[in-house]
Every structure is written in structure tokens, then in C-alpha cells.
Image (tube, rainbow over all chains, first blue to last red; front, side, top):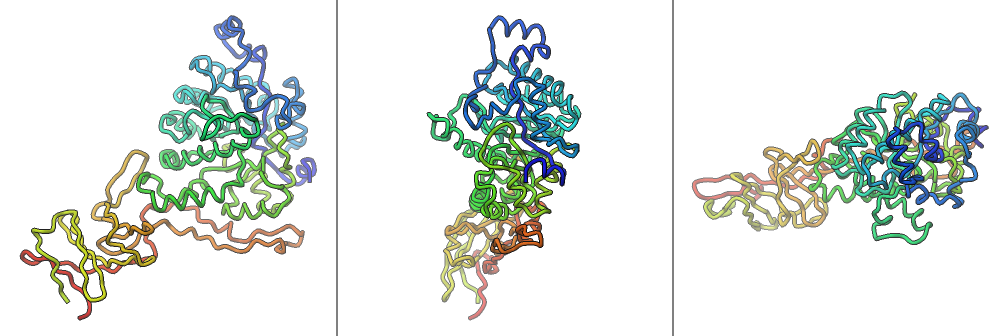
Length: 354
Length: 158
């Protein structure tokens, strides 16, 4: 089954669609004259982290599938992600690398401009699109302010956070940001990538792209462990988190190990009131792409059973990235009730979108 | 049968002693002003329960806040960490996830030929469980009394 066949038979929400970063010229209308002067005087061409996680010519980046203008890219999204269907929805995000920028004011100004640009040029152009907004996580209070600014805006549904942060996201220094997200019922979307000036693995810097790429799952496991064990879901009981483009087939062993350790050494973190896996099933959802397994194999069904919930997976194309697995093929393998959940019901529960 | 454990004056808060009566090994504990006696055998796998750590039961409504649960002291078996209320012997544990397991088989198919996942997934419990949930084990406890200056333990049988 491909996208077009699928769309004829069902409703779906694509929770992970990427748009190319705008040039400084494209951003200029959304920045104040002060910042435009600053950009001009500094010769700023974009965050230095822009191409770090996605080298432009790497096959996985899928650059040749992207449009070279907003109009072109929007047309591609309509064709490939929305399948020209009125029943489809997609959540779009733009990565710019603001987390790698030291200036609190410049990173905040760029975040605001990027969000206004995304809302005007993509979300405003097609009411099937919803926005995941950019914030500077290295300044949680400022991130919170941007969430306050846009949290009430229609079709703003998620806060994008890069997987690689200077401290894991359960750390209490992020409370201002998490509180704002909970208050406005925005999902915290942790996405593949990021550049926060800390080593890309728990044991130091990588030298080669494949290490970085495959190693991202270690990074997000640490983020998930932090959110659970630091008690983010006890402190913010309505907080919803999505892990996007981070893989999910590692969940069974992760849940099992966390639950096992918690039984014996819970006393250090008594605010974790129940097995860690229960927090995952209640508060966290995962986009299905990349699958990290053959899409058509029995292994995938076994993994879903081991996760012990039908409610954690959400359909995503991860357009335009090329991951080597076809999410539509996975969908066709699922029994119909589960397929419907993955296609849109789980995303509808995760996001405050319709 | 009443067994003398010792003098109250010799038994300070935080002390414990293990006594042997016939086949039984029994730990006697003083926690603040109260005395407890519990069988020195963990119902889980037979470990030396009374050699374990004694700690107050605690709860936490939010990160950074820890509260003692009044009148509840837990003894943790040194072998696998099973915790028991010193007063009642009741074990406390994680809530059992009520999930049955079925073998996954490609032969399970509905009429369209799609594989059918076992029913187990839709039965996953979603409610919150409080931290202290009664577990499956109960350690044997014995009444302790203090008369004049002596501590006594009541042991069933002759």
C-alpha cells in the first residue's frame, strides 16, 4: 500500500514533516530592523549547527526531495505527505540549530522569527498543517516565554526540542519550559539531531557520521530516562512528550530494565510512584519512522506486543528524510484496529489538534 | 511460649537481635519506642530477612519533596530487596502489570489474512497506582511485650 492508496481508505495524521531552513533573506521580514542590521553587520548566514545533524549531500538527508522554494516544498508536502487528501493532517517543523547559539537574545529573536515564518508561509497556506515551534532550550525561561507567546495560537501543537541537549530534559532547570508547555497543552517533541556543544555519545565525540546517526537512540534513551526518573510526569501530570525520528524498537528492553531497577532502588526517587514503563505508556508517544527493522517483518508485531500498548505509536513520513524503511508498508501489516490508532487516533490523543 | 529476649535498658532504639527458638530464627527490632519481632526468613526465596536494612516508609508527591509515612517501617531483605512492614509482615511492591502473554504467531490471522495481535495489548492497565501496594508475600511476625524491665516474644507452639 502506498500513500495514495492509503489515503483513499483512511484518515491519517503525519506527525513528523520537515521543511528546509529559511535563508536569512527569507527570515528578514519576520525580524526587527535591529536584528536585520545585526545579521548584516556580522555576515551571519545561519546557525553553524544547521548542517551538523543532516549533512546536505548525505542520502538520509533527502535534500533532492525538498523544494528549493517554500512554494515548491509546500507542493511536495501536499503530494507526498498529505496525499492530496482532505482527510490528512501533518505537523511541520523547521530545524535551525538555535540550541547551538550562545546569545540568549539572538537565539530567542531567531526562534520568534522562525515560528512566525513557519506559521505564515506553511501553516497559514494550508489548514491541514499544524506547527511544531522552535525555542532556545539552553535558556528555559526564554523558551517558556516563546511558548507563552504562541501557546494559544490555533494549530500550534508542539514544541520542538533537539535530542542532543547540554543537560537531559528532565533536569529541574527546564521547569519553566516544561511548565509552559503543559499549561498550553503543547506536546514536547524531542527530535533527532541537535548540537549543544557536548559530546554526541555518553563516552565522547564521534568521528564519523554513521556513529552519530546510529548513536542518536542512546541519546534519546537518556532523555526519556531523565524525564521519567527526575519526576517530570509527577511534577507536570498533563505533560505529553513525543519522540520523533528517534526509533522505538528499543522500547521493550528499555522498559524492562527501568522497571526492574526501579523495584530495588526506588528509594532515591520516591516521586516515581509507579513502574517507569507506565509513565511511558501514559505520557509518551513515538513516531514510527525510522522503524529500525524490516517494515514487513514479524519482528515489528512482536515488538509492539512487548511494548504492551497499542497507544504509543504514531504514523510519520519523516519527509523528506530517507530512512530505508517504508512506514506505509508497516501500516499495511497492522491489524485494522491498531492501524487506525497508529494512523490518527494516537496522534489525536497526543496533540491538541483536531 | 514466651521467650525472654533481654532487658529493655540494654535495647536501644535502632538495635536488633536475632534469637533462635527451636527451628526458628527470629529478629527482634526496636524502632524508636516500639518493638517488633519478625521471622528471619524471607518468604520470597528464603533469605536472611532480619539482616536487612530497616528504613521508614516514604512517599513523595513531587520531585524534591519526601515525606515519611507515619507508623510504617520497612525491613528490606538483603538478597533481593523485598520490603516488609515490620509491624505486620506485609510485603510491599510494585503493582503487578495485569498483562497476560501469548505466543505471537504468524498463523493468527483474521479473514482478510492480516495477522491478529493477541488480546493482551488492549488489557493494559492505565490507572495510577500508589507507591505502596501490598505484595504477594507475608513474613511471619510475633507479638512483643514489655513487662517491668524485660522484653518478651510470644512464639506459637511449645
